[in-house]
Length: 440
Image (cartoon, rainbow, N blue to C red; front, side, top):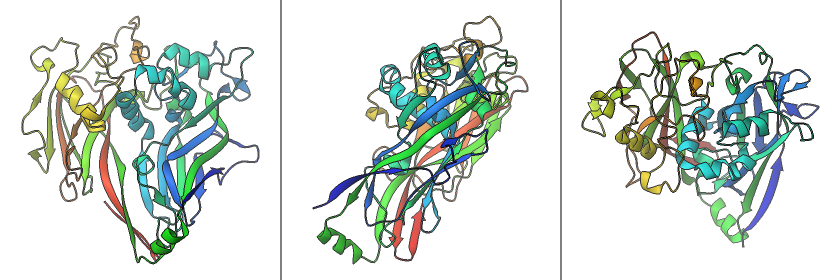
């Protein structure tokens, strides 16, 4: 009979005082789950620790600081990249760059307003009310602790799968090396106004970090049978990430994905000038905007595969093609985007709504939605995407042909828009005593 055990793992690169921060020269947090004759239950894995926001060295952030972080991401805004590799062979199994951008789409589509003001606040320091998140996490009122505890899952294809992950060096991946690359402080924090003079030295710090997970030991007869096999095969999902920019009315993007089984592709946007800029939220998922803050509505989308329209064999013309002044997001665009993040019929709750997914001008400094910092219900939720296969689960090949996007928008100024693309794919791991092979 198999048995389960719980593990607690501290970072392999922990400092003498137990704290880690990007500012103080620890940009990577590394955890090693050694090879063993067990399975890791990926959905049980949690990253636990304490988060503290500082105005400057030795000075905690207070209500007078004016410091903010993205309310729908919470602690996830601090994780710039997630890398998982085999501890035995160092072969990469899954790497998600621009992790906060991926989580912005994932959390926005798959969690509700009620999630964001309840359990996500406890687990990941998320609060869909920006003022509540600022006061409860960033600021430190008198009488309250200066450290905020969290215990959040590391969302990714490998760990979110239902198949247990074999850790054996003979019939599994040979242990796991889980590395979290921390994000720059200037892209985590931003000012609640246009004045950044008081937060130029702001930084965040983690303490008491650890991984918590559950492992399963096979029954002796089952383990004996597994060890007689010459190879072990299991499938898992993964996320492939890319970045590019567009800066014209007719934006054309081509991404060589190099994957065999692509299930869906989704993208989100932010003006390039907002990235690593304390005046703006660099993790916001905004609709395209011009350099003066005026909106640049998307009027047409064309998805291509190797230059041919696919999977939509038509141009997706939005409401704004005929009515440019309409601030309402086109329902086709919204549905396809949500369907790419998760199959539309599988979405049980969401936070994408007309209250946080619409076109708005940010050119007026007195506008209540100044730079999208005060949009209700967790901030802007704009994105585009397309689902390739929600029936067979086998996906579409982009191994030899590139993914393409033609986007017609109202960009009329020199205003580069950062485009973050995420492809949801299916991979296969083949394990032998000599090592592992990743088939993507």
